[in-house]
Image 1 (tube, rainbow, N blue to C red):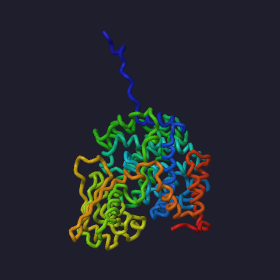
Image 2 (image 1 turned 30 degrees about the vertical axis):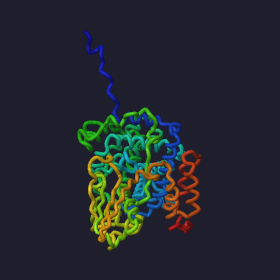
Image 3 (image 1 turned 45 degrees about the horizontal axis):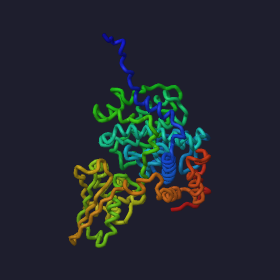
Image 4 (image 1 turned 180 degrees about the vertical axis):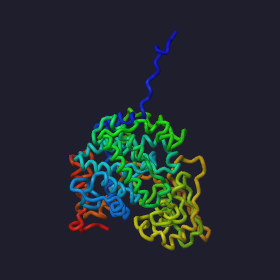
Length: 475
């Protein structure tokens, strides 16, 4: 007769954070193929440009004052300046700058913005530690792995519940990337992520306000802080994600997640070798870009006349609606999350630009008049799940009708790792604060990234803004 002693129970699976930590701690630069290295380069080019452009965001000055952030002899660069502050504070301020314009890249699985989280932290910590380009590339891949894998097991439910995955998931990935850059062993890396779990926060109700970009800055700071605490021997429960009172059941309910998906195929190639981060060409929520492009297409049609518009219908995936169906705006930033607003601006101007979200732009009478004619409707069941496509239908007073459907995720900018628009976008963004010759020098330093001898310190020096000497900037 077989006894219990003769048939021991199989060993319990390791906690999810432990499994993730063991894998990312073993990442090596050689594992990053051409696709992954291009993804990292695109992330740094796009995010650094966007963060430079966003460095004059009014919310940053308010944060500095409220938090009492002062300059430091030793520290990391505050983008848009030549000033250094403590590394955690640089992560906070540059994270806000990277997300302030809503022009940073995204990831469909994450339902958020991985590079606005990872690039500011790796620039800040990389400058402090004098990291090489290869070092930060591996750290990016490690943080990215954690963010996207968590999203596999949480979304779309996490996003639909109203959480802001960029920060709730992102803070854990930031801790992972920082731990990798600091060279922490797997056990300490799991601890860093477990500490970060207790910093997970950010609700979509604050979209369209300054607080949305604060989500990113706080998560960057807190993820860095978590890794530093772990390096100092601070303790946390590696089961903080999958414990019965951990992140997964608390944020998602007992059946709102798939833990197995998070670790499925974990022994394979890093996800940076296969995933993509579409970059933006409009400074507003990615969920509105399909409608913008459809509106622009209609605007160029024969017989179309904005003065004769009678009715505008926008049909989108129901997942797009809770945060973008905004017929009334409380401030210009709210327009970034209003299908009514951005579609009206596209119909009137043929594009959507940064100035559309400044000052009193949202009070423009012609735009308000068009917004009053817009109806936002959910797409019928049976289509592509969680789609970013939009259909715009317009009826005019003369009886003519126009219709266009666009899916931005099918465009070249969305499906290539290093899209043609990238470098022009970088030059436009960086040129808002840097003189032309330094935009060129910074661009050249990034073109070989991360297969380059350029260190993070050398890269960051090229991004310094010296207001008394940098007088030639593009508008």
